[in-house]
Picture (cartoon, rainbow, N blue to C red):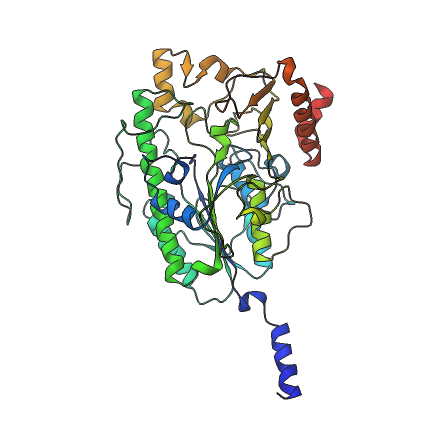
Length: 460
């Protein structure tokens, strides 16, 4: 081999982008308001064959948590890697709510674009300003039914993947299912390519935090159908990766922004509002079908994707850490604590809560405990809640209506022995040391993440 050829080869290699040698693509699928309702999470009454298949090929997280149980606020965390009290997206982006992410934030699509990625958003977006989270492509053309046309969304995704562009890709794929369409779940029409999957109200599993009522069962059946519609989109999306030869060079993440759209889950930081599905399939995994107990939260998503892609982070510190090292570990040490921060949903729903959740305890600090807990407009209008009001029920699922509406400043739950989070131990002298330790950790978290509400430690 001549010296001239070697020098030429070295020159080519030095000037060849990393992605040209081995693509490292990312698909981030975020569904809207799905709880732990899937076959792979133990619900055998709901049809989620494609999510179940993804779990069998990757890693299912048993303890994954959003940081705030509201759509826009949660999506800002997913795309920024910052708690929403830091990034400024305190609540909903749209309409009269009009919350904005702060100007300093550089979202994930911008970071990946700087690293040579082509970026695409399909479906629900729900954050602002757009320049903080700019995608090079918005592939929403021709969706008959918007972001509920999940199969058409996946077909658009395949067109994007097939584009004549050799750069690696980042695809942000967000369904509007199973979010409510005001009161119902938009099951009153057909969606191209989607097979209707109706469920009998008598077959649903009523979770402890909902009343076992006629209204609740009927709405859960509608919710199950909407979850299945999202699952069909996932199936077509995975087929698109296979069709394009990218199944084995793409990191796939499936998650929900917050808990199910019923009072008792969404907008609350009880576990039904924040403990959510997360299924990850990495091309680097040697072990498949892993079920990990590692506690992770949505602030960990950006660091994980940055590590996988090799892209650089922003100039400011992120709040999470990559969970790639624990994808194949069932019980990794040091992954037993997460934090949550919720302030608004709609702009009229001021109820700041700060939470530390460990593998044993949850401590909730209700900063505006003097106020009754507020209702999202669609949750208040739900047939489930209206049935409770009509009958004058004193209990809503396993919790009393009064306890749901009126909360103390401090809530402490032993989530191992009391997974329903009913018995508040904050005033139990035998748990005083545990409470003190959790309060100190929560305060340090607020200081570390520059939570504006930390001033209440001085003024209240």
